[in-house]
Length: 125
Length: 157
Image (cartoon, rainbow over all chains, first blue to last red; front, side):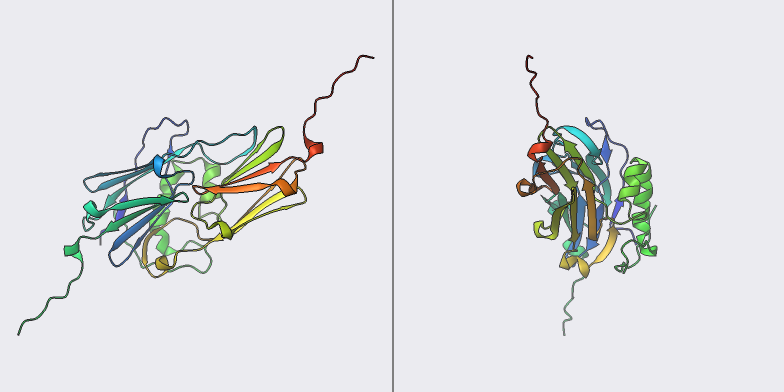
């Protein structure tokens, strides 16, 4: 069985000095389709870019500027934007894909095409 | 290359990788070539539990701490100050509908986290504030009066 979303990320370019990093992603299946959640702390609606090209979906999250108040004593956060590319299962109805972002989490809802869903066929007498 | 997806069951110990993590493991390998090793060791589920990224800044009158905690409920974040150390801990729970669904990829952490950071100067505990925005927690700790840098004027003698 083909996996729902295959990671197709290759190198991308960005203006940020540290380039792109791949966000951690969960993908799970529901009755109507699939849900993909990506962790992008520091990204809100203004920084989000979701592009669909055929069956390939690219998610880019440009984060809010890292605030630097004074001397840096500990620096673990990366000054990088988020980017990841996925190949979608053809069963997904791309016209009905929706995206929302909240608390630094992108949620992509990927509904299955109606014709792919199991359907009961009435038996005539 | 297609990965066979095995039905995923939540492991009892979130730190232990199991066979179902093959899809996650492949992403881990991709990340080896994308991230610096220190970042990988900290964030990788294969190596350790959840340790959120933390920044600490100091200027003349305050410390500022930023912690990356996407998808948390404010109420589930605990912040405490004790003996000159700031402690941030909490727990992230999986959304209920996620529980019964079949998972194809599972890279995000679930469960408890804890970070502690020692502050090199005393702070005014009653004036500490915290804000949670876009998945980033920012804690602002004003320095105690005696800790602030002071100008000392030179008298003519």
